[in-house]
Length: 249
Length: 313
Image (tube, rainbow over all chains, first blue to last red; front, side, top):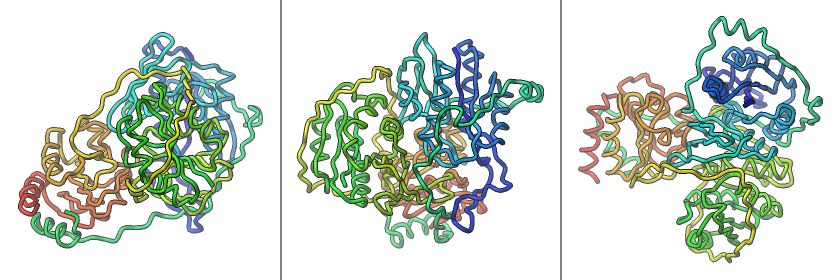
């Protein structure tokens, strides 16, 4: 079974996000970038499927600027077999990303596509579901467990109030939640080996997809800060304040 | 303008989040219809018809929608919704699951998790885990939008008298099937809509100690939450997680116990009306957002808190 994994280059999750003074966006100049954490979980799951014998080949794809090849190499070092880079400096929104990935799916014909449930920059939580709809596949979103059984996959999903398991016909789309697995670190020999793994580069036009944003960002602001509060001396004072000052109990 | 709101429910009762989404629809302005899709949803449709501001309730009652499978709901909503200017749902795990399918089938963009309506095509939403707030304008003819329920005050549940219309549209994509579910059994209110939330962090040390919080929660009629650190450490299940990667809450009172206040946690609770932090580390960032901070060992403070509450409640 061939597995396609999509990964995104985003601001490193440890970096403090700063809004640009002109309110046009977030300052990404000279900021550490990394693979989106949910995408790391997607790569790890694919590698585990391969280790279990469920997957035979892992193809990793990323859409973005030249530098996104770093994240593809990271995925190759973690165990993916080859990479596809769709190179563009445009702002690729979820629907266009899904259309680009659909074109890759049509070429590669994977049995499963694994993506992170959302990226930590735009926080949209859309691309996997859109890809599934465009390709006519079923979807197991927010997965905490993935079990392949013949021509089906059972996906346990993290939903409001608990867990829900669905059975999907393959091919299917899976999006990862936090508890699906704990991603491994790439070893130095594997990082070296990854440099020799094949990586194809192409443009959105090569795939016949026009990247035209449908949403325009008018402004980006820092969130309103909360007014500083007070320290209370003990529990009695706390309960008194909650009852008589804040009136919330 | 005409707005289709997709009701959130469990086949037996309408979830309050639907009323929050109707409020967002009212802020956009126009005729508001509510679609109730599920199995044996007569009572849900009746509740939806009573909600303030609803023009018409459309009911798609079929086993294909009984478990809210995204493949089936997506096709249904795309078909019913194509005559509307806006399609709205709550940004819970159900809406997040099927709404992007609707958008893709209609070939339009989706605006996720809005917290404010600026106009009929311009919305405000948090990005970067709430560290930045974006104002975005949608250019498509149909706006597919998910709404953060806690950001909108709910419309009245009673007082409306919408007509109810049965739809004869059955969409079964045949791609997926429900297998099983494990619902967390609890008499406490739902985390996302509770008026009071008490959450524990890594400082709780283990899952057993969350019983202390549960006792306080039962006094206050509160839901119990947790930080990602507590979930990652295995103390409690992930559906209790409050934060950017978990539940977004905005109760009247939020009590953070043994939670340091990582950015990702703050993104999930900093819209709460009153925040209390109990932590022994006075440098903990949670104190920067707390209205009332208590620097104390939680294992002494929480039992005292319970006793003091018993005196005044």
